[in-house]
Length: 117
Picture 1 (cartoon, helix red, strand yellow):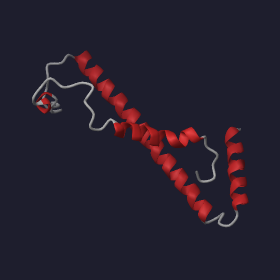
Picture 2 (cartoon, helix red, strand yellow):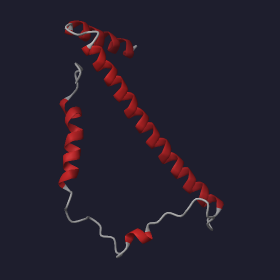
Picture 3 (spheres, one colour):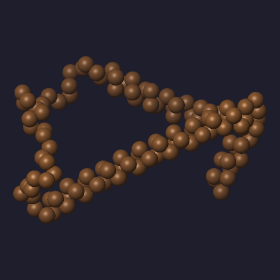
Picture 4 (cartoon, one colour):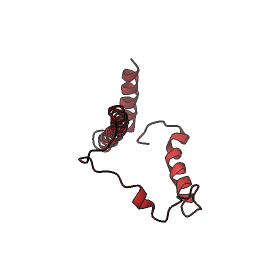
């Protein structure tokens, strides 16, 4: 991928997972919801309506939601950063190092060596 040496399993794993998930489409569900109208039971309460939860329960719910928000934000940030870096490297490869693959390989080797220090 873009001149980088990557193990084959890292390249194929996302495709294998997505294809595996697609094979389960249309299959019998593992768990069947025991209601004729599950959407009526899964409605979320409005934030401005006070509920009868105690303070520790509210703190527990809030902490769990904040932790999920932090995890999702970090994952999205990691994906955006990697997308930007791969795109930047591809642009360099097609413009700066066009017609000089040895220069591109040398640049990758030196940048990897500097990262390890």
